[in-house]
Length: 314
Image (tube, rainbow, N blue to C red; front, side):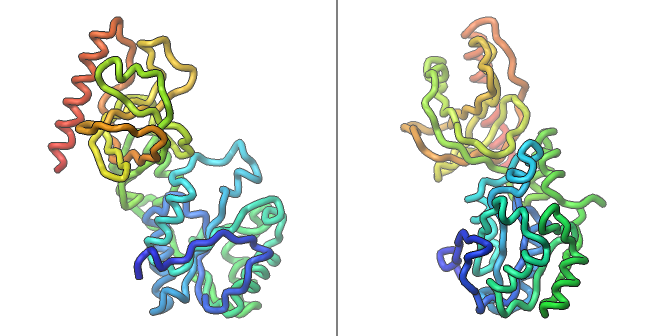
């Protein structure tokens, strides 16, 4: 079954129409859709030979955005990325529950009552062992089992996936990215980490230096520390690139860091395009240069280093 046949829909927990055809579901936020999440989905799909009997439920926005915004973690995936990755993992249905104050105030019993209403023939809920739900996160997997036994559905708890004796978790991936440990993040994600941005108008500094850059705005995901990186950019064609994430200190320092990418072997207008930046590789820290010729020479060295990096990993 191809992705075109998957059904992706946003629903209100309290107004969604019944889905009697769905027998097995998994529930979670699934930021990153990492290998631990993928194991949860694998076990969900193992419950039926028919993918149309399986659905994955996720939430948008992150519950902490509503509950304690200052504690909401930076995201590993945009909502669109997350939904696309969930659909690619196999379940026939990806259902996005809009998380708002009403959902926040729902008790564990009422939450599962609504789940049972939407899925009247529910047989199994599959979750990770740290799954919490209901007002003040009062419900845990034991609560889920107790209510499930009353309502007639089973609960499958998927233990954490371990790597090097430690669990694969979104928080651990964020830590790796903030330490520029991209290979670790890639291993735990099961793919290269990528961010999505939209090309915005810039000051034209890169063009004047002979290395035009695309400034990316609208980024909602975690970015690595400021610095210069080799990377790949998909538009959707893929090009090797050099990324600078920083404040451009040679030109007076911007108040906020900016991500700009210079695509190698590309010519064209990217204005307004949505692009994906992936395959991050740290080249050097950002630094201030005394004059433009020094900066231009360093840019040439960065481009050479990026070409060398990609040549070595072919």
